[in-house]
Picture 1 (cartoon, rainbow, N blue to C red):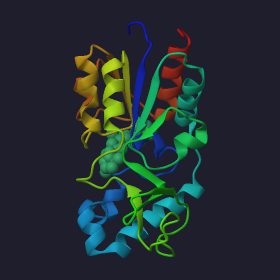
Picture 2 (cartoon, helix red, strand yellow; picture 1 turned 180 degrees about the vertical axis):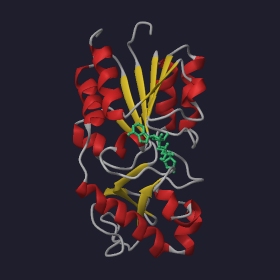
Picture 3 (spheres, rainbow, N blue to C red; picture 1 turned 90 degrees about the horizontal axis):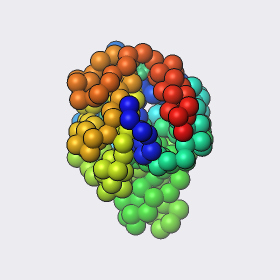
Length: 234
Ligand code: APR
């Protein structure tokens, strides 16, 4: 690992697994109960809006039952103490990074605690149940939808993320299967700019071979260990 100044971290559902939030793929995964195309596509929202709103209402309600784990806390400590550039890009729509204290955070797939108005296009903080009320606080129309990036929709902040990837000298992927683009391609951008790339995952993923190093184990152990090693050389 060469000199570390500019870090990009990518997190996926695996970083929240030990907090009790189900991942998507794998035994008991969220997609096991639902077909993705039934709950996470624009067509699903048009075809069966109640099913989609209930799916996200349940995931939003579950946030009250979970806490950030040691991996979220370690990244928040890195955020607070790291003097160089840092961007934490999360594919997760939970608020565990924020609740641990992370600031330099980007939600590429949106957030459960945000709503998007299909009428005026505004985003608004939202913490209730859309099956109860979908009234937009900006325009007053009954037009809110989950502010979740569905399959086939544009991810958030891609330009800012790609710029950070081009400038980084360290890229760390935590708890993601590398199944979904564009996030699955970030390691290739980092490799192309000669960054040192590290994968932290419970087990090898289909993308492990793209990384300079792949460590296997729970995020709650691997992430604090990695953060310690980086801050020791700050
Ligand atoms: N510690 C570290 N990694 C873990 C842990 C753990 N405790 N538990 C599970 N993992 C790993 C799994 O090995 C797997 O590689 O987390 C990964 C979870 O993969 P997915 O369920 O596919 O979740 P993710 O990669 O975040 O999915 C990406 O796909 O469905 C869409 O938009 C959705 O953001 C999501 C995207």
